[in-house]
Structure formats: structure tokens, C-alpha cells
Image (cartoon, rainbow, N blue to C red; front, side, top):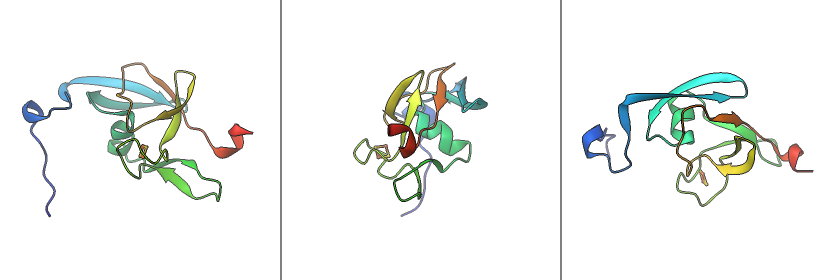
Length: 103
Ligand code: FES
């Protein structure tokens, strides 16, 4: 299998590379493009993990389809949002969360 990039015009997710967006992650600005999920923005920015599981192991995207809940974070004050399922919106304020915060 080889990697391939779907041209934006053929991308059924609605990705629009000509429309930049900016989100804030733990106070740091991160840029992406309209149509990306929050996980997509984070991965494109080089972040592979953004929380820790009960064992302390880093967690980020595992399934990428909303099943495993490994990619949870807080979006605009709403906890436990799956980053792989939520489309990023310009101005979103993202906070990473860890297991300790659940107690
Ligand atoms: S990566 Fe599995 S639910 Fe988001």
C-alpha cells in the first residue's frame, strides 16, 4: 500500500486548503485548514499524543473513527470530545486532559 493525497476538490470531507483556521491548544496557537478534524490539525502540527492513559502511556489518535476514545480533549469547555470526530472551527479553544482530572 502506498500513501496518497486526495486532491482537495475530490475530498468528500470538505477540506478547504485555501481557508486557514487557527485554534488554541493549551494556550498555544495551532493552524490548520477548514474541514480538518481537531485530530487532523494536531497531527499536521506534529503532535502525536495529547493526553495520558491510566498507565501514564501517551494517547492520541488510535482508531481515527470515533470508536476507541483515546483522543479525548476539552473543546471550548466541553470535556471528553473525540478529536477525531470533531471538525476544527476557527477560534476553538482546546485543552488537553488527563485521567487525573476525572477524579
Ligand atoms: S482516535 Fe479513536 S475515538 Fe478518536
